[in-house]
Length: 237
Image: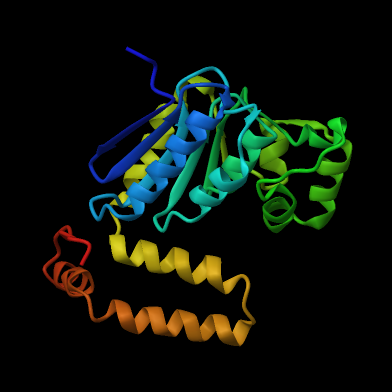
């Protein structure tokens, strides 16, 4: 039986997407894009975790449409980086919303060494996350950063011992998944879209989504559960 290029599973409203090869070849890229489309059509998924089943997160390969597919997921996406995230691998991680790394992880954009530039959003997402100056330094020098350095510049939000990465990622995913699924999606939409708007436009978008959320079952359930002092039972509708 041929090896799966990407492992995909769902448990307790968390979708786990694991790369099985250090190089993202055309087959794996297509599989990953198809999975992203399926996730957006599955109301049972509240949170997505992107990780890898090998010793590296991802070191290269197909990227353009793949990174865009991850960025287009309308649920919160957590990237758990357990090894090298270089070139394409870092572009995939940048497409996630939260990045948590093992202390042994490495990060870099080496494309300029080969006379190339990133083609999967690296020149756009990296400066939006770590700032223009640091992004230019990282891209122009093609330096590789340690997990500690990545944490210092805000490229990742947390660094943990490699042996604890799975448990810490699970804990974070469960924490997020316990929240209202529609609120999570609207919150992500407000932030992602609002970043490319003026403040006034962003505030209008926030207000629209806020009032739209008040028409949902989940919002009613959230209020009811609070008044009744019990855990909410969200249904994503």
